[in-house]
Image (cartoon, rainbow, N blue to C red):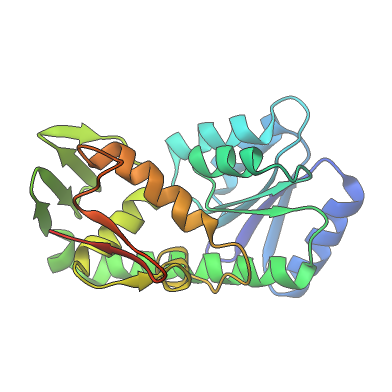
Length: 234
């Protein structure tokens, strides 16, 4: 169900506020107040998107995210009261698609939700309608990017990528040679305009280089264009 959202939050006041506002926007909302409930609801309800608090009883949000990412490809928006960059980076590294630091604007949260669901729908339509593209394998030196199976090989060995890392690599390779600003990559890959911090792109590029480049410090494919953004070279 495309408009079903699972909200996982142990603060009852915030949970009620989120449920009220999301329901008002036309979404079907299911809730959980701890990590174990979150896993149960995600598996049984199969939501289109999960809003997941980092600090939860029973099982914390990072562990919930790690488990769910192995089981399903549902978009996950992580909420955290911690402002340290390491918490955000860890959340992204284990598979969260986006994060927001408390306190946050409800208007921005709703905008993020709409954008993430829109992106999920675009991905679903692309998978159903573009079989020709899905069968394509892109090769760049020792790299092979299999768009159909979401498999990347480097020197014949399978590279373990998160879903968002794969999406970013696939987009850049499809458009190899073109330079993209960070804001454009956020729109095309993450599916929304990012009003502030674009470090998400830099973090994912760094992780990709560590996984697909022979020497991450001297990349051959994922190139930085100083003052502009990034491009992929075959």
